[in-house]
Image (cartoon, rainbow, N blue to C red):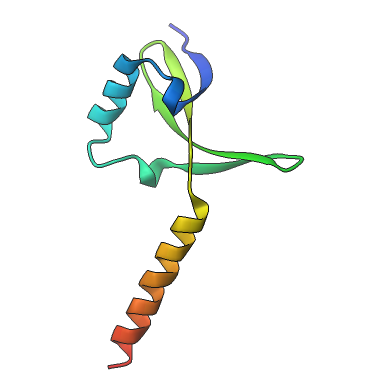
Length: 84
């Protein structure tokens, strides 16, 4: 059986599929998220999720500013530790 491809936002998914995602990624899917650049200033973040019927590309909201600040904080913290 061939699976259908679907691109869908996480918040628009059926609850049963969301439950399956939580089962597969009990500690979160952060490591699975990839950046997709469509050109013309359009882009999104998403991860792949496969069921018996569908190959999902699940779009997620990302707060990039928060992520960058967190990484910079960790790098600064590591530099302070290394200097001792």
